[in-house]
Image 1: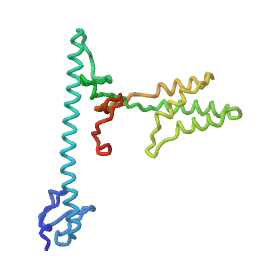
Image 2: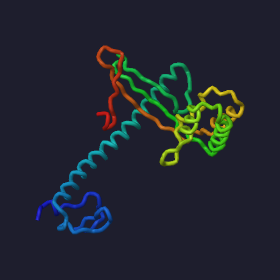
Image 3: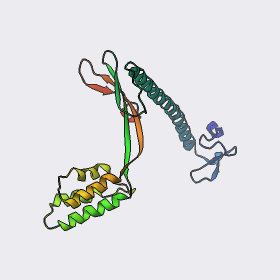
Image 4: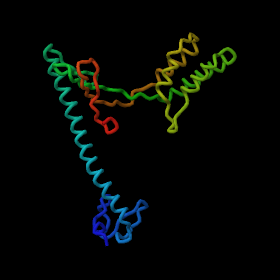
Length: 214
């Protein structure tokens, strides 16, 4: 028997000795598991262990970076006897020689509430009433704006396209008011981005903190 077959299954610590649990939850005797499957488990184990360590390090880095930036902003504000409230706001910090910059960005997550249904009906009523004279591209924009994804979500960017259309009709303006009032802040996300200047140019290159960017 291959000595690997005495190893314990990494992904299931609660399984009795001599057995591994498969994807369906069934217990399989280790003696019946192919060597290649055991080797695969060990490869996955090493990658997952390392990934979890990196994930923890990134979490600690993000927390420290946000804390350091917030503390520095307060310190800077004290120079002018200003007391800053809240933690929101985008800010960019440069190194003294301009070689590096650190950006803290905050993005609100915006989603429409139930009033989007009224906005949609009002908008469609306008387009239907204008059916003879409405431009085909207007119909396409409206239909695309209210098209949902597989998850039933609406695309915010497409909805905002409607608000940029210069249409003076009072009914359309009422529809756009309903659309605007339906958009609510449902949460926010914060990011840290770091950059390094390329040579003597004014171009900055991001220092990747994600696997895809490395």
